[in-house]
Length: 192
Image (cartoon, rainbow, N blue to C red; front, top):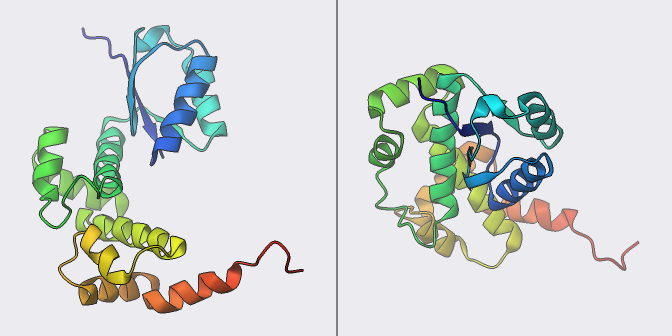
């Protein structure tokens, strides 16, 4: 019997999450070999770890220890997609074949992954990808450093119109309306 030394963690979505999980696990004396979104490989076998303490500390920080094998696959799908979109500077999202990416990284047939994801999450993988791209678009708009055209290019959209259509369909407002609504929420320090 092979003893696993990998912890699967739900809700790890960014580099900051990796930092928090690393720090919290190290406080508990867990020796970490490697850590990526959703997975922590530890030096000791899982059955030698204080799993209840780990579960509690993760929960206190908005994460969740995953034990179910299907839930692990779902989380891996989400993390691969989020990671690819976060790496838009090094990954050409316009040419990224997400089914192939998921098939290669998870080592399971894409049809199986797609079916499992849809049944579990209630949306398709394709829709999840769109939602993540729109979240990244919102982030770019809030920072205000890029034009919509530049955002569309970075996130692999074929045109600004395509991004605009998906943004409106997903959020219920245009990118301009979104930008305006967030501009009104921001106040300078000296405004009372």
